[in-house]
Image (cartoon, rainbow, N blue to C red; front, side):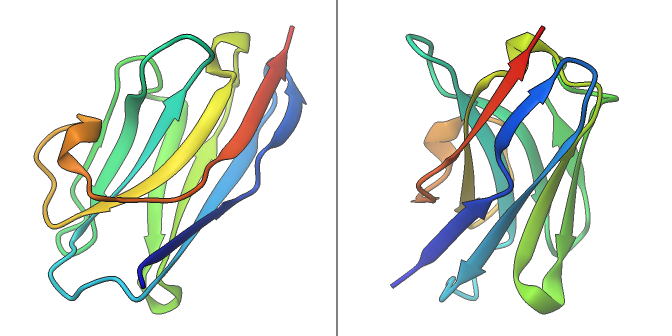
Amino acid sequence: QVQLVESGGGSVQAGGSLRLSCAASKLPYSVTCMGWFRQAPEKEREGVAVINTASGGRDYSDSVKGRFTISPENAKNTVYLQMNSLKPEDTAMYYCAAAARCGSLSPSSFGYWGQGTQVTVSS
């Protein structure tokens, strides 16, 4: 059974940093895209960053570009999200997801999901 386990969330003041980790196991060989998504209360889930683990190609939402970095550690089947210069509007539940290929930041493109890790940024 596919498992995606997120960790690293927490509470931080605005301007601070956090690093999220996503440990994947039993992913099908065909999966080459990993992504991070977030969902704030009463808002729709939105894509934050995706990475093609085969080519290294990355894509970010405009709201996090320049502040967040997605990176893989293929040997550990782990994907990280380094979040710097955090803002209160970054507060959300953050989810790791996997897909056969990277097409967009749309959550509907991803079939495997973790349980999420909460990030809270205070002003």
